[in-house]
Image (tube, rainbow over all chains, first blue to last red):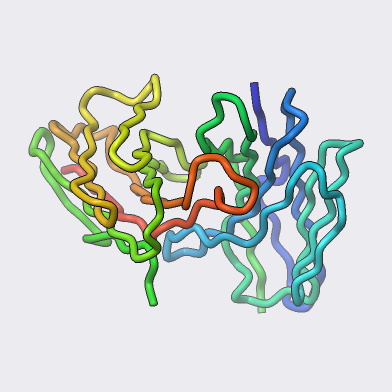
Length: 117
Length: 116
């Protein structure tokens, strides 16, 4: 069975601080995909990144960066110089590939990030 | 430039009164999904359509039905809403079900359902 754990329920930071959101996953499959989504107060889930299990290269996009480590089954997300607009719920998700897989995402419970001015 | 559109954004219905939520997409994606998200919880998949093929999650109540009359539209019907069905309902699409570059799901803004 698949499982995604986001141990941090809520994080509160002051603007311009760096913040890291943790994500740990469990799967028996050797091929899988990991995702991060942002859900602002408006409710829409905004896709941020997808990472394939066979590509452990870390990625940076502006103030966002992702650290994927298969050895520890972690896919952590760092926001550098946080801004008030980063305040949202962030979900990490896992999807297996191949076989009977049909695109079902397994979500973590989400981390509520609040950035104070 | 909205790609996944949900109407209405807010829906109020009465206990037991049927309600329909609407989703449309401009991405021409093959797959459309419906998720239920209750307060402070992760989204929970209800069902999905791959083209016209309907796939129900094992634990989705019979009270929830879906229709997909064409590629662009998908509807969620709640036949007899209960108080426990109050939630955010999210529609998502993906190009295919299983492909390394085509399986990312894109979500709409959601419909928040209130049951009185």
